[in-house]
Image (tube, rainbow over all chains, first blue to last red):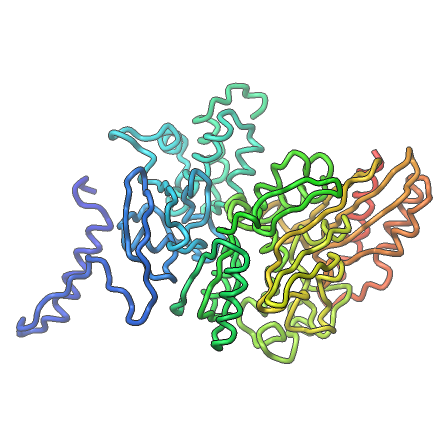
Length: 204
Length: 327
């Protein structure tokens, strides 16, 4: 795939064309819809302006009280690296760091995040350099379909920050809350150990 | 999700006022700690609150404090904070282990002790919207349905099992729960906080809608006290207990001076094995005694069609807990 066209951008472009065709109809007399902008708040929904720091950048956003952190990140801050798998706190694909602690972004409301520091998978690389964990994930073929990968990375990131040389059991325990339907757990575990300072292979 | 208003009061009186006012205005208000269970219930449309009152911003409800009578654990203390607390790990192993066995790191980082104790049941009929007792109906579908994870003790008319890991640990430790509501404060022994379906099949505990479970007190550990929590799941991680045992013994050499054995995952409330405790007290702990205790642990069990496997499992878990504590 060309580096300038992502799958997301391709799908969005195709969708916009379909919507434009549908709305404009054969006469082309009507306008086109903007489907990439922030959706308006639902009529009557309670909103509040919150301030939070996302990947080191201060952001302010007017959130509906019912918006989860996951949908706020994806739909309104356009950080789509955080995935919504089950949307019920079971799969871990939406894992982000809240003040350096891993949590399920689908199970937190955005309004609860006022004043908090959020780190998403987009915040791992710096200056065009992948985080060593990301590189280890690539080197060890950790992702298969890739849908759970950003959540796996965030749990692993929190683990290594707290425990730079974990044992294999500690890695497994820390990543318990990230389910992989491709069942590639062994490669995820290997990748985290490779990125850690764990050098005593007997403990592995 | 249906639109609602979320408020995060900074003090307990503000929280109680918000709950009372909402009730007077005919609004449906709910209390939220970490949020995991509440948001799941809202998304599944099992509840549709107008107001969500979040308690985790109330400083006085968060943290573990020591006094001469024991430890007071704020209801909004996270399970993760409990699991890593030095004194809990050292003197109240059963509670630290129970907290650490809950769900996943992400949920323990957000989830609170009060939320773990007051979580709704995870029976699949309830969670999938069947109009059972828990959803405002007048039947329990598990009684004659897919009941492999349901109760073998204390069931009827609802056959849910209480899902909390910390609940059996706190009953075994003789903890006391502090509850604050518009009418003031009351304290309830842990064993009386949890209520059988015969009391009210729609509920699992003695909390009123506008009451807050503010803190839990565990008495000072006595000399010779040993405790542990064993949890058996249908996979090695990330689920509820199909059977668990919270065991607290006070030993004098090899002689058991006091015992509390409380099961999780087998009854609508934490299920205390009083007869097993009597059998242990005053006796020398040996293999024969442990075998007798394990065999006695399922006296009175009434398995449903698909959960008789829990009977030998309870015996094994109780036997293992006592064997490990003797060592």
